[in-house]
Length: 531
Image: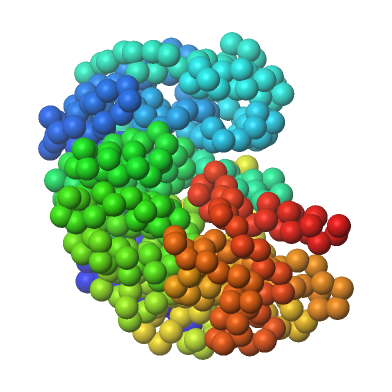
């Protein structure tokens, strides 16, 4: 079943690396042009509020120009890779835009990874220079040595990146091509070596524009960035959209719920983009409420189910808040579908319909479209889709069919075009001859009023190939036991979907991008079952 975009009148078909796709004709085409436009339209608006200080769009552009000059002095030329290992703040934003301004490829190194993991990324990307904040210096130098980089190609940032300002030369800039790669993001790599998904200007700008239009962002908006800026969400869904409308981005070091609620109030945040597990934590704070936080109007999230109880509590406590559930991948530069605030009650469990510039289809194992309501793999096409994986043409070829990206997710689409994610293909559980979709089961579990979070996965079973296992976190002030979990599933799903192994826990571990770490959970459970 193919589902096309819902806003064709505002789009035009244009050639792209994936064939003809529908694009916004009036778009800003690159992140460099986005900054140039912001300098012209909003020079004195504060672009960033960071621990290093606040900067306007004009000042940010001057810092980017100064960093561009410094990178040239380091001998970097168009196409070279610049690796950075930095916490959220001014430095990493300048690094991203200076790399794009210079025609370099930004390589973000997660601060939560080990030096051995950095070493692989440095070697794989062929990084010419590595920059890091001082606290990561020793690890970065060790990683660079393992990757075969010369010692003098590793720098601690200090004032190296943002210590120089130069006039922004917008009129003299040769803007990059919109299909140029300006960065790579390494995927989680839970089943092997991580792949380096290319960041492309066309993809970022279409995603940013989609956020601006779908969320109705304006010049008065202020967003708190809790996602790491080396990853997609922080700079594609927040910094770049704010740049387009003349809004302000506030970087947040760590999310401690009480302190975060205080920051939301003090900084007059209007637009929140968080992982779903943050909502129940914020709701524990009595200060997270209307009218004290009446200025918070947009609440966006994605990546895992939000408990029905949390949605209901948000409606009571923050009635002014418009909620949006976004589904996307690193490979789609963030969103592919979005469930609008008005659709939550009518389409519970859905991640919405495709973005105006996106098409989706659900196919069987042979690549044939399935009927509405039937399960299959979700394929995605549009200008926000990556051009592929850096340094891995085989993975790129395997990920696409005639311009359609294979998402790796099982899904179904109803007859109105709403997408329901059922599972990652690699996470689908085979119980005997029956398929159990873990995400579908997680949505069911968090619809129970006593359950705040759930993680479902398969573990080996000698008789039925796999058994269903789940970790469950009770809702605040509630209690739940294994029998309650099993009876709830038995009441709504087939007997083979009932979890055989249930563990009640206080917290479920997550990886560096905020997603549930099912690999760690599965390993823990299998170790326990072998004892």
